[in-house]
Picture 1: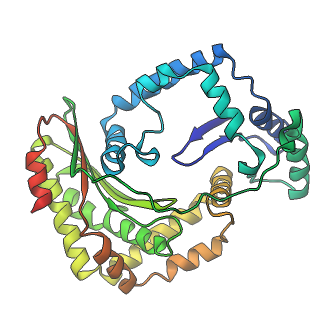
Picture 2: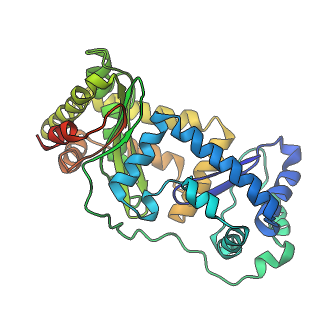
Picture 3: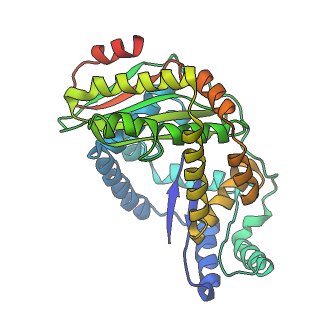
Length: 350
C-alpha cells in the first residue's frame, strides 16, 4: 500500500492478491472517509517530507525539473514543487491539513479504479459499502472534470540557475507544449519520442552517440489542464554544457524547418505503441491509466482507440507541430557549478 501526489491529483493505492481485495478496499476507503489526522501524525509526516525535500535537493537530475517548472510558470500552482518548501512544510499546522482534508476529500471529486481478477458489480458494492462510513456519501455535489482554462504564466525567464558543486551540469530545455484536451497531443508524443525517446532518437544520436557529450539524454511531452510542456534533459561535463544546449537548438531548428524522416517517425510510433502495450502487462499500470483518464477527462478512452490515434499520426502532422512549437522562446533550467547565466542566455538568443 502506498500513495503519491501529482501536479493535479492524489492517488492512494493498494496491490494485493485477489482474495484480499475486500481488505484493500476497506483500508483505502477508511483513509478517505475517516482519517483522524492527529497532530502527532502530522509532525511525523512533516519530518518524512522534509527528508524527501533533502533527497530531491541532493539529486540534481531531479532538482532541475522543479527548477524548470518554477522558471517557466512562475509562482502559480502548476509551477510550484509538489513537495512544497522547507518553510511551507515547517509552517503547516495540523488544523491546516485537517481542514484541507475535510474540504477537498469529497465523494464528487473521487474516482475509484480497480484492475485485476475482479467482478465489477461486486467491487462497486464493496466500495459503496466502505465509503458509506461516517456519512461520507451524504455530501451533496456534482462530479466535475477540471476545466481546461488556459494557464496564464508570467513573463518567462530564459534561464534559471541553482549553483551546485556537481561533477555534471544538469540541463532541462523546455518549450510550451499542448494542453490535455488538444487533439495534437498524440502527434506531440510522437515528435517527443523521435527527438529524445530512445537510443535511435535524434538528440540521443547527436549528443551521446556521435559526440559522447552525455550519458543521459531524453525528452518528454507532458499535458495538464490548460497547459503543456515539451522538455529535453541532458547531463554533461560543465565545460560542455553550452555546446549541448547549442546542439539541442540546432536539432530543434532543423526539425522545425524540415520535419523528420518517415523512418524516424515509424520508429517513434513503434516505440510509443510498444511501451503502451507492454505497460498493460502490469495491473498497476492498468489501474493508473483508467483512474487518471476518468479523473482528468471524465471518460476512459479505449486502448485500441489510443493505438489507432498513434498509428494515424503522419509525417506532415509532425512537421506542422514541430514548426509551430520548436522555435518558440525556450526556458532553460541549470543545476551545476555555474555562478552566471550570461553565456547560456547568449546561446538562447542566437
